[in-house]
Amino acid sequence: MGGVVRIVLIVLILVLVAAGASYFLVPPVASRSQTLQVEAPSTTVLARLASTPVGATVVEGVTVAEAASVEGDTVTAPVTYADGATGRVVYTVSPDGEGSRVQVKLEQDLGPNPLDRFAVLTGGDVAPLIEPAAAAITADLGALPNATFEGLQYQVVEITARPFFYVENCSDASADSITSIIQQAVVAIPPVMRQRNLTPSGPLMAVEPRVVSGQYCYQVGYPFTGRAPGALLIGKTGQTPGGQALRVVYTGTEENVLAEVYDRMDALLGAAHLDNPATTDDDWTTYEVYNDDPAQEGGSRNREIFYVVQGDISALQRILPPSEAVAPAPAQPAEAAPAAETPATPAEPAPATP
Image 1: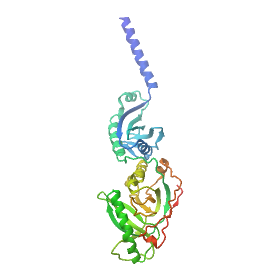
Image 2 (image 1 turned 90 degrees about the horizontal axis):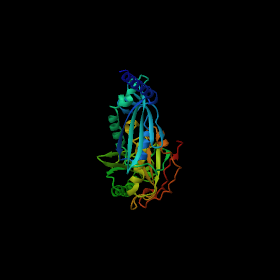
Image 3 (image 1 turned 45 degrees about the vertical axis):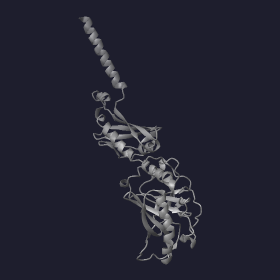
Image 4 (image 1 turned 90 degrees about the vertical axis):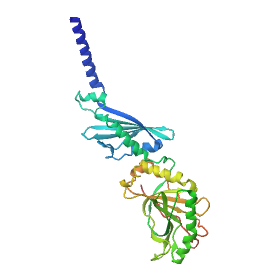
């Protein structure tokens, strides 16, 4: 009988020693993780997660408390829980074909109470949060364009608004449709401007402020000098966009401009959390300036594309710093363009200090 008691005591002592060792050796953190798939490239996904704003909600009851840090393919952001507890959300991003695989881990720091340490095994308050957190992150990353901003070169410039004569039209996103509208504008707009004594002060421009019923709606025309006319049967007058802008010089065809510029810029804006109009003053306005004959087959080969800035672009500049300024070639006016009377000049923006 005495031997049995000794064995029980030894076992009990070993259990207590093991429990004590676990208390001091096991990290006092409850955590749970889940892996998800995203169609966007890993560079875009990693950049968006790394630029998550302080105060953003990971999932209800979990808020980003400090700016995230990045080490390799891992993003770590301190978070606070609804009950005041602290912890981290950790994202590990890896390529998965043309998309990405993201492991999401929620961590919660545990207190000194030994009973709290059992949450290391059970997941504690974190366990029921990981699934809705993964769902929310999947939805957020799923809105990213399936594109990368790698290879994009842009400058930050200041542009001055100028008087603008234009006509409005809409088209689908096909290169043929867009080129057709520009070709018609080159022929139709100059005579109307001459009739109203309006002198072009720059190359043809296409401002794209909105999408209507899935179509791109343009304001196509020329900046001008001269007294703005009153009532117009054909065309309208207004102002070209002005303010701080992102400028890209593009020398390809209309067929490739979406992939080469717009998809990449959309990926960069998404990565910097600037793709949501609710976080900025208004939608971003884009426009193109054609510094050669925009009516040629395949469209302009020498254009500048501008994104008029809304909101703070510091995160965007950290993700992809601006490149050295690239000047377009001197404008070559089309034969039928009004610039034949007044030589067209390239757009006037000057590089701004980021």
